[in-house]
Image (cartoon, rainbow, N blue to C red; front, side, top):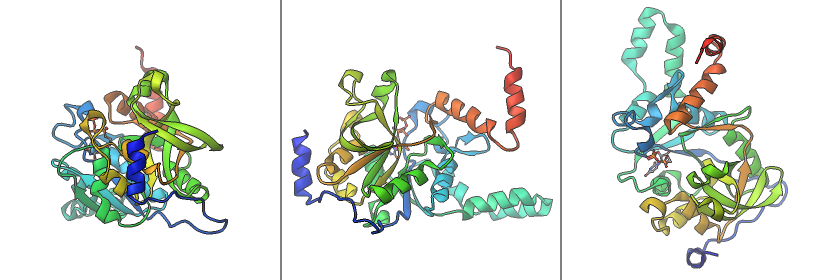
Length: 313
Ligand code: UTP
């Protein structure tokens, strides 16, 4: 057990969360934090002069899939954590009167609708992470905008292909298991070192109590094969925990370390989501996601499938 964290947990005065009595409603999740301030080194040189979140995946930028998932899950207030060189994200969600005028003149009304929809679909605000000190620090940057309420976190690199949006699945779990919830998936042994890994105690179908979390362990030290992926529901006490979290792996303030601290005083659950996750933060993951999304695209899908079948390698 991490005694330092235990002491901090008591010092912070955090109370262990309990399940609510039947019928009592949880505070709704109204806000989503999308962390988009990272350097994107695994996608260089493409990410050198444009944010990796703006790299197109079929016909829209990667970050748009996260925004659409939030909106489809009923979350309309979105806080995007950005950094230097990420203006393209703000421009994308802003209105472009010149472009709208041009499309109107040309009679391109379907495109006009799509372009307008992007700027109207959610209430988006931005905050700068002035130094890229890690994911935990990026979440902490949004503290004042989130305020004292539970919220969702989206890592836009992680793109999910699922029948029910993954955040929507998590919000359903949240009704039964009020508390912090982490989206997890089984990972192959050779990939364990790329993930935060949880020590689980099974509670229900696909639901676990988290007993401990380890950031990128060696396979022999991993407490399970359940890896943390890029969707979270967090209680506002995570901010106090992150403020007390020292830099960890890679000298970054890790969200996993903040959650381990929070674990000393609040329930943390893991949910094994239904669906497929793609890590679009690497060229190979992006290629896989592109193929998957293109195949199910209403207009492009059938032609693209025929094309793939015709390729002779
Ligand atoms: P990653 O670990 O993928 O880091 O961050 P990265 O910098 O984006 O990419 P690589 O590893 O250099 O290729 C996970 C998430 O946390 C955000 C990223 O934007 C991504 O959504 N992040 C990371 C921040 O917002 N700030 C940081 O300081 C670090």
